[in-house]
Amino acid sequence: MREEGHEGRPSAAAQGLVSFRRMTMTITATTAIKEGHFWAYARFYILPALGLLACAALIVGGAAMWQIALLFLAVFFLGDLVLGNDDREYHYAHPWIFYAMMYSVVPIILVAFALFCWVVRQATAPGDFLGIAALVQSLTGFDMIAAHASDGALEYLGATAALAVATVNGAIVIGHELTHRTEQPFSFFMGRLGEAFSMMTYFSIEHPYGHHATVGTDADPATAVRGESFYHFVWRSIIGQYRNCWHLEADRCRKIGAAPYGWRNRLVRSYAMEAAIVLFAFWAAGILGVVLFLINALAVHVILELANYTEHYGLVRDPVDPVQPRHSWNTNNRATYWYTVGIGRHSHHHADASVEFWNLKPFRDAPMYATGYITAFLMALVPPLWQRVMTPKLIEWDRHWANERERELARQANLHSGIPQLIDAARESVKPHTPAPAV
Image (tube, rainbow, N blue to C red; front, side, top):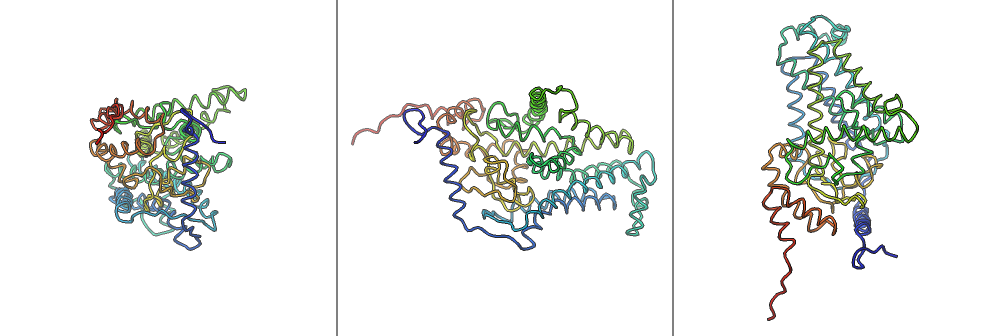
């Protein structure tokens, strides 16, 4: 028996389920590639490798600390442009290798953070904090104290940029993956610890329990509305997610009979973790260390919000309908697949958030980005360019993917978007149909 909607047609939920099954069958029909060779696994180690390079840059000092940040951007931007797409389906013989990769990120962040504190401490208390320079010299022969003897403001900002290269891995990419493993306490803890070095442990609660339930609706601060610039969205999203995650966790505590402000509140424990890191930064490098550490955290927050902004920009969903692949912008860009550990396959991720990144399918029939992630991020920083690229895609989404209720939501969003093409599309959609004259 099929589920009926208005006027005897299949309901939107049923249509979405059929669409999801059809898409899954399409993908399953493609040639599955069983991966066992070195590069199949090594390509996902690019981010940890960059984290290690960030540690090396902090040791070497000088221009190297800025160069690693520029390398980070250049590698991924060029990869977006030249490596093309990869819409193959993979089956990995040794998925434990991916857990080794993910767990390695937190120790790398710890090393980068210690080195960052050592570098910044030179501004107020020159010396060998924690004996780090002595250890480096004993292992490599490199004189770290001499290399940083003439550091100034530019070098301290460079150290902050290098730290961000390391922490963005743990906070956004690996932290996101591990905190979706809510049934694995150790994985969840490691993900949250990685996020703590960017002051975003709230993400471990709001994202899986909030964003994934409310995406595409007015209740989700992490869904950008049509016509909204990134510069407006970033603050609305951050503030809204902090507020939402507190309500989510307080409600959970009440349901289990715990005090909302007590230690059983995971957000309270998360904030305690973040506070301990800030206190360490203050002990190690003073006020300057805290300020620069918070700049690192802000930079990672901005990168996260660029992802949130571009992944669901302008898409709408009726809260009564389940989340479907059409409610995310997908990309099968090869470089994005590598450096986001699969999260570019966002339509499958939101259709089933329990699927590990290495099992995400390409969903070639889903709404698609025009580019890879880094290119999309750069376009989002230029609102006229972003709107020029995405406005036709939104009109296409309304016509080809939206169900009946979503078309009305999209029409209202178009009318309030401030974008002439979307406003025209909304007005066109309500014009009465005029039959063609008889010949």
